Image (cartoon, rainbow, N blue to C red):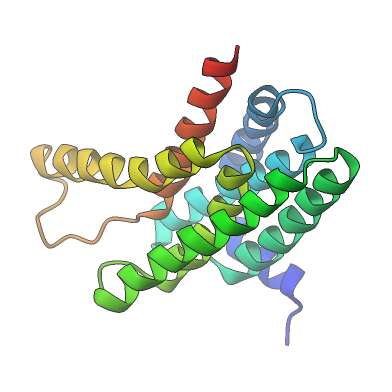
Length: 192
């Protein structure tokens, strides 16, 4: 049986080039978006994994557990370390609350409509709630709302271009990732 790392490598292998280019850009963005501080490594890890998850989900409609689980664990540990090292216990508690709230909200949506929202989206919501919660309640709120707006716009564009119908399944992970990135970017611009 392959290890978790081997499974992750197999899941992302067909998309290596796109992930490599996107990963570099994601690190640059993460360094800028997080500003100076102990949370920068956590956001960089989440951003690089987000690129991999977004590319794979867009192509296969799957968010691999082999990427999501370890990323959530590493980001959680890095943010816990950042909370202790930077004396930001309130941000750490907010990150934990964000993970529980966003993950719980997505779980309720999945239970209400299992075919409309997959468990991969629920697991990704935990990671995104952790990250967005660290940066504040307004960021978490925006990260909760923006994916649905982006998903609606994406669906309308695809339907208008006749590349989808009302019944076509659309990968939601990229919308979740883009919505969170937009929320974090807006917060950074507002702080500047």
